[in-house]
Length: 208
Length: 183
Image (cartoon, rainbow over all chains, first blue to last red; front, side, top):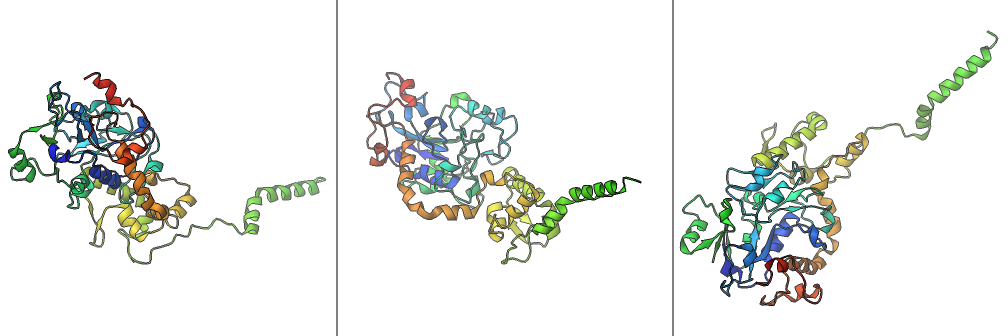
């Protein structure tokens, strides 16, 4: 996935992709911040890219919201630490979760350097409105994260966030395929990734 | 045999007491009847023969679950050659429309509590609660926008009014404001 950070910043208050994702995946909205469950959200630039932010960060990016979600790393630490194989890397690169198998140990939450994983401290069902019957909710004691709309890709649809974006700032494609739209876009401009120095090889690229 | 009356009387009382539940149920007309499930009218055949489904639907569902989640295979080839999408809520519930009239009747009778429904959603449940769905839209947008970094940071250009309404007054210590220090 390639994200055009400048296009995304055209309307800083826009939450179309977040709302689309939350609706598609029954992501709960808790009033208590400590219980927060996030799949896709916005983070200030300096926090999304701690290695990039400096005292002299360009005004165009300083403290500006950057769209962040699971990076579907090539070398995912969450997968390495999961004791039950409830999360694993699929052949196509998606870091998938099996909520049936998650025992809620939260090793993956600790392992993920991007904060992409959320734990359900309470039963999320009452905090989901409206419920989408085509996608399961989670239960208390289960970790969840972005699944790259695996259920939509399986039926030939684009991820919900990509589809919802008015600015077409999110481009989904096969990074292994040199002809894919994502790869073509990567050739056009300089891109950054979140915390690549950690060796996770994140697969979300940001055009800056 | 001087105690004949006592012994026979005692036996009668004993038999009456021990068979009391039978008489009681017969009198009350509540003898254990097998559950009556409502069968779908739209389709004649299920994804597997009835006998197999009756005894082993749970095994089939678990196989489906593992196939879909772990093998990302979503198509099931049924015994009669038909193909089905492996989905509890979309395939099973399309015909067996009522969880209460089908699943629950048998599960209640057998005293089993499957945890499928802790996560998977009974489509009927949504229809019932969807009465005022459209009125939720505004609060939905409000909750989504609350997720954005705290508007206490003055540099944010513009915030939707809805996001500001629900926020407490005064500078709010977001989780990042302390971490960013004086930068």
